Length: 229
Image 1 (cartoon, rainbow, N blue to C red):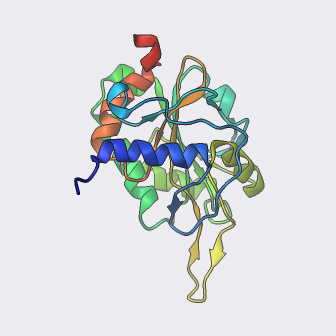
Image 2 (cartoon, one colour):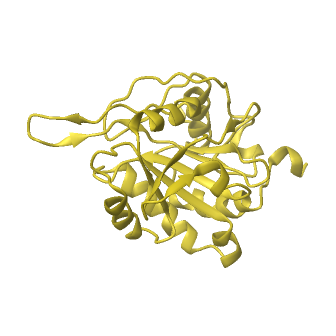
């Protein structure tokens, strides 16, 4: 039996993930998250400008979230990132696999972009383990990837509430018998366009570096497939 290609298969998985609000697990096991929106992949991958999974209306709204940034100051996500391309990711600094891999790929993809794309793009990492990820610790960890990455920490219930409408599940950190702590969270990167501050593209944990490299200029310019026709 012929196997489906990787790109269409990824799009199909994304459709199920978002429409049914079933999130991928990163660094642990998650349960499905409730969502108030039913965003879904809008078209076959080969018909999209993006290599990530482009969504159809109703789009996800940017979370109304105020937390603490790595300098210890209050950061209003909607106000501070308005009119900019935003890649939003939930995770934690002690994550052994998904978080550093994903941030590393995004950082490398950004370095390959011209200055105007980098200047129009924000990468926002919201910790799911605020008890250990203090602003100082978060800032030091993110600087290893890119000094311009924005790290946010604060009340876990606020963070969980912000992730839920995006279809991303965040659970309370769990301490194990050996003393280790894991934080289970959805592994999607949600991309918001600068034109309307809404999410139009989603990237799953299997997203390769070349996909981010291809899509970042489109995100920075607020491109939409339907509008390009």
